[in-house]
Length: 209
Length: 209
DNA sequence: GAAAAACGATACAGATCGGTATATATCAGC
DNA sequence: GCTGATATATACCGATCTGTATCGTTTTTC
Image 1 (cartoon, each protein chain N blue to C red):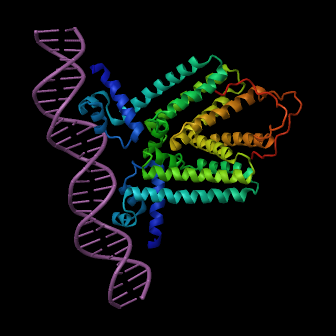
Image 2: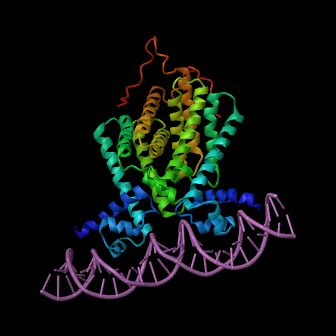
Image 3: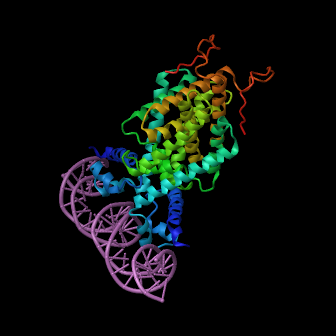
């Protein structure tokens, strides 16, 4: 292996192990053994284990968002369809044999204090993904792009969490169906369409206290 | 403290610390220090740390499901409204200053192998909660109670995951609004209502590939 | 091709981990 | 009130943790 590749190889190895065993349970010794690298080498590239975690998360953050963008953009040009295509991308991740839940949510789950740099890094990833949803919702000309994005995000997170336990792609497909219904509903009756409109068919009696 | 209370006190202390710092990061020494108990005492009640974790999860599982049932049943007698009331119960948990995400999902996130007893315990909790949703959906006479329950569950999990990062109750309220819309839709147009019906208003053009 | 930098291997430091051993004190039940 | 069970306090075990130090070797760079 060329020396210029060592850093990236360490990040890949660390990410694989963090995903499989978690952050605290994955020791430095295991990482260097799996990477086939000396301990001094690892500590030349990363000052501490936390630094390694942060670099790994940042690397995966960029990589996964780039992959999602590419996947979605190759699938269709229609922004609304692109919002739905994000679920297909997610399903690909979830169906991976190595899927063990969202590594960012897990990272936040092992570093729970809001000021912890690892928590912050995970939070940043979630914000950037949400921003992408909002960008798509905006391009799709939804009047409430932020709300649409929040909803898509909620469905993504729900599907990922359920899939972490059930180890199945089905939750993702189900949340996509919900997204389909939601977006269809929004296209049919945008939230500002009642301005100057007659009353629509009354909703079923359900209090939303 | 009476000796008969020690075990319960240890479980409470352990749960509080697991929730705040995670399972691996919470050491035995911290637990006994916070509980004000000798190490030998802890190990008289629990064979290993894993045993303590399992007992803590099982305790919280029963307690939280009992609390949810009571909360929901005191709120309303209508089963559909009860499905919605589960979100209000969830919002109470999430708005707690000590909320750090679902302790069962976190437990699964730190014990990822499907055969790990801790993972199994977390999975069991999720199944039991889902079964309760299904029970409510069944009582509400939804024709596809299982699907309704899955959907409610998806919304719960999504709201919890998002709230773990944003530390806000808003995701729960948003997912409740989605649940309201969903259940209203199901009441208005149950999935088998098209049998012998004329075509309904065509859906907006959205492929659900 | 020489100097500088990065590598591997190993040993080790100091702290912390889960868990045990021992000896003494306290409580509960008959 | 005696007895057995359970508590406390403390010391300790071996393993493992993150991180460093040493040193000989390889690779990059000028």
